[in-house]
Image (cartoon, rainbow, N blue to C red; front, side, top):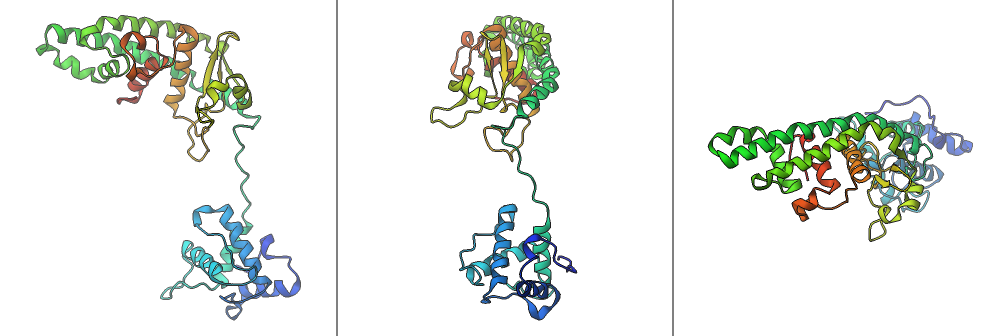
Length: 333
């Protein structure tokens, strides 16, 4: 339960005309001076405004809009006070919850109002600082791109050896198949490669090696852009068919010689509205790998599940998802 304060401090509950301020101060100081249901007056209207301010700042409390006539303590105000007191457990031991605004309740309300209202988070769509933040995030996650590629290059020869042994000698291949199960699953899932066409793995290896050679160029070939510029430069990518913003964090522009990353490329934060809720670290690394496929190897976008092996060998998604599956340690689509 809240501690009863010595005096009111919030702007909302102080500096009122003397008669009204006397009523508010008395509510804090004296049990007989509580604000109770069916009262009328400016002190009730101040209480109603205070509760609505708290409702806006702290939606987790669940206070509903008060539609009672201003200054009249009726059903909506009663419901709001009960909800507020229930949330903060403002009830004396052995007593039932009631809609009376007494010394503890007004102390809690005053404390909530006196808290400095947090500054709203900048809107990633318009914040001029976003470009610099994207640039920093690219630097942070570049080393992880090389790690993703190295994981793939390490796994692919082992997967090929296991698949070829399984074709020649199924009995003695079981251990190798088990040890490379995740990589083999990834080859099937993202490239439609199995024991029957395992020779194609050499082509996959060759592409990953070419990408690895280009990692050193990333600081030169990557660039950050703000969201307005992204929408202007690539409207076909920035919006879904229904006109809603698409979650596309990057695109390549060979004519300008850059891979451009916009404010959608950000660390995961579910509290931020879409399409700016961000991505996990390995996904941010995967986005860089994805754009490398477009920029350096002229790969295209597509769904590996709906493509054949020959098409998957030229899909940025196939190379991105196979490497991410190895990094995550689980099947990934």
